[in-house]
Length: 138
Image (tube, rainbow, N blue to C red; front, side, top):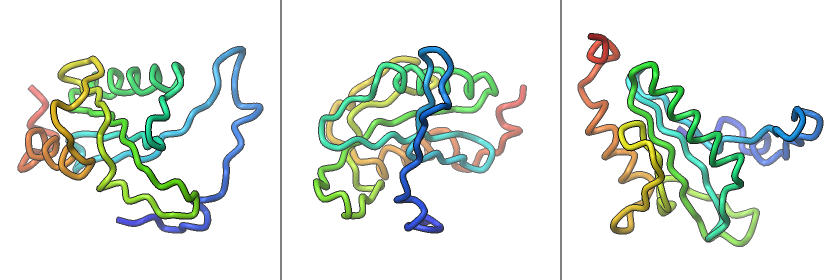
């Protein structure tokens, strides 16, 4: 599914005034909830731009917290090389730089190049295809 409103998606959201002490708000670039069975989180970065410490910690905690529900979760950090900020970034074709999943609970770099679509499909096939949320309940 594409964005409902591309013009709105390009509107900057200013997080000033939302933090508390040293804690600040962050964004999640995309999230997929698959048939009430699993979650996939996506963080998209330009080339080798790193996540901030707080953003990294937020993704780790989200994966851990969502996993408490008993559902598989993966967070992917992927990269694009579109230097023109007006160019559309196709999430499916971005390269996965690293991921953090509920079955490993640590950041892992893929052993070979893989794009977002391939890793997402692999995760869904392994943890979600033909499964129902009731399959995870005792």
